[in-house]
Length: 253
Image (cartoon, helix red, strand yellow):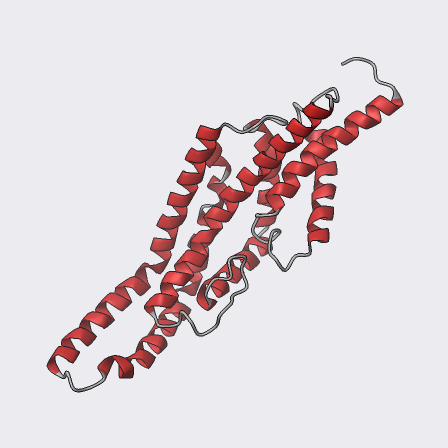
């Protein structure tokens, strides 16, 4: 690398930190836990700046010269897209638990008891509870360190200041969506079976006794049975909800 003056070296360092900061901050807009609406934007920006400054000396392949204004703009935009791709992958996988919560709510008659949840997409109450549990376990078990390590290792697969391959990016997002849908189905399967059996039994009874408002009388029963099943299966739900996190970076290979 050519000799740099103190001013040139400082400018290059700022440019490299800027590239890392843009990728980290773009990812943190969507990362579970970090990107929740309850986290102030100022905290997210300061966290991204601190992580960017800490990661920059460890990342190989950063530009060794400051380009012109157009090059700076293109590099910054490329890093923003790289960060958004990583954030979308994480958010897509974690959406499995909120999707499962929506399915569970619909099948035990608790879809509309509250209007808003605690997650980014304002999911139904049960989905929000499961999501909050997954986030709590994720941070308590050091999962946030895995996310940050994934951001650092992403430079091996997504070179700095280069746009991600559109075809590969679309492929991995679709793969993450398929994985999330499979996981949501697995989590909510007991409640789908419960609803199938319960509604089938009600249909048979209602056919034999059409004068009785059976569905109105049976609604509290499905709610109570569904909540009991939810309490019994919650530990098993939270564990599969975290099972696919180690595969996030594997999706990019």
